[in-house]
Amino acid sequence: RGFMYTFIGIIGMEQDVAIKVEDIASGTANILGPDYGTLFASLSIAITTWIMVGVGVLYMILGTMCLQKWYERLEKEYQDKVGEWKRKKKREKEIQKEKEEYVKYEKDRREGRGEWYDDLETGK
Image (tube, rainbow, N blue to C red; front, top):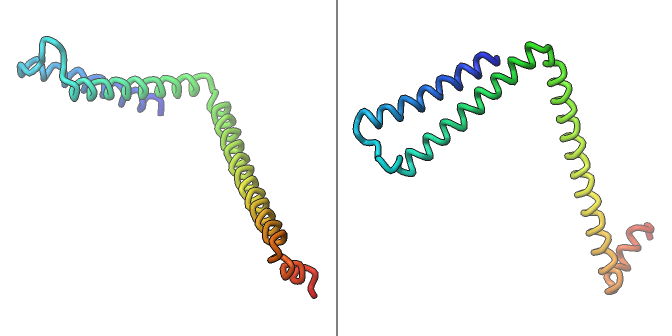
């Protein structure tokens, strides 16, 4: 997998160079530098290709040093923490909803509308 990512990154680098060479050969290259569209495209291609090469190298190092299990363990721990965080957020929303319902109940009760609520709760 690492070789594939690195290969795709190198192809992207070559494509970026080919675009620049094509501009120079066609005479559309500006002495002051490229226009903003070409600059943005070139920059995004360069960033993406370097990220691809970096990920490929990282995969190769992990594979070479037999650290794939370490990476999988880190990934599992991360997923467990994300799941725990989601459960905690859900519980916090439930508690907040219960508090809001209680505040509404108390407000109604203070205004005299809550007596029939009390009858329902006690079963009278």
